[in-house]
Length: 71
Image 1 (cartoon, rainbow, N blue to C red):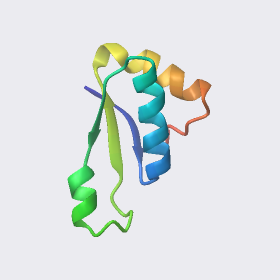
Image 2 (cartoon, rainbow, N blue to C red):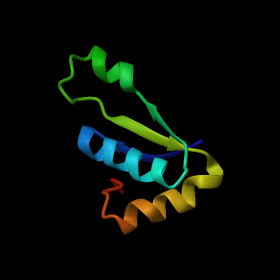
Image 3 (cartoon, rainbow, N blue to C red):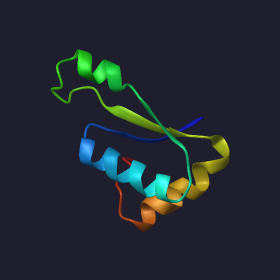
């Protein structure tokens, strides 16, 4: 597993998940419950993770669609 995005922006997370799912890339969202525990203030970022084999193509897809990778 490799981290693809770390963001507090739920719209960015949802958009990235939709793009990658449309391309058949399985995406795992980490820190969802931790983010909820802090009261949904948006302080703790969520992470999108992909399999190592999909990381390169997933990064390319997100960059092609102007998704901020936070790097």
